[in-house]
Image (tube, rainbow, N blue to C red; front, side, top):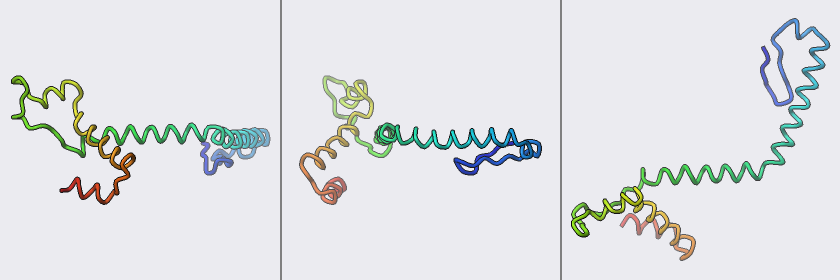
Length: 124
């Protein structure tokens, strides 16, 4: 049984392999090459990994928007005897919460609105 304790250390729980010098040297070469290679690969791909993590975070937060923001037109608001909310839902479900989040982003980034003032405005 082989278990990794540290990236450059392999523990062998087999007496036969532990006492065999050939197996010991093969395991040592393999462990050193894998450890050094892994670190260099991570360094080479650090920017791509960081960008991918950021994209994943945005996707997850975007998926949570309709869970935490409930925003809809009144069911009594009709346009040609069709519910306005039904029209929006047929185009893209949860379009109003998404639009609300983009409005908040616009106010924060483009209009430089204070976060505290924005929160108070939302609550009121």
